[in-house]
Image 1 (spheres, rainbow, N blue to C red):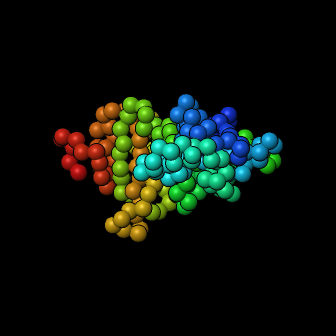
Image 2: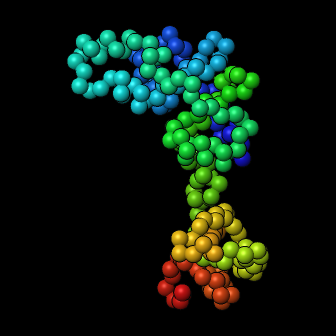
Image 3: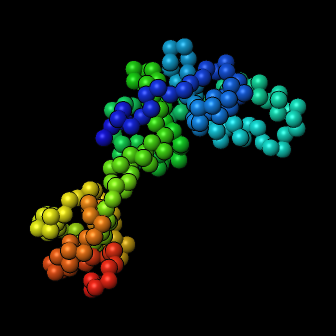
Length: 215
């Protein structure tokens, strides 16, 4: 999946001549937390976030001081030279950038112009949709040896029990470097038949626990 498939392709923007008052009003009216700051040619020169505005206008300010700051232009508080993404970047690359930098949004540029914005919330929604977590189903976790053919064996078992797969994730096993934990979301709310079949084939099923099924 690519960034262009999950980004907001019509982001709200401001220019460096706009004020903090303008930014706060736009965020409040459009219910957004990040605003790219652009030039007349749609070049990105900065980003203003809700956090930036809170830091610029601390609650301890006197009313007169606060009113004065509201009329300060956003270029004095914006994040300059922000990290940016490209429409053809992968969602995996995007997730890694968010993870490494701890930023909350990335302007998306193509040919030097702003074409969208993508946020951590967009990435979260994408994760939910890709894993099928928003659909009825069950999640089964299996500790497996890190050897070729294991996943193929499991899919054969799933086929024999007429179980449809919604998503498959693999992550390290904390107890063994030679094993992995396979997290499978299946399209059934009662996966007992599948669990019993996996146990019969000798797989180490970690969960879920069901009455009458011996682990």
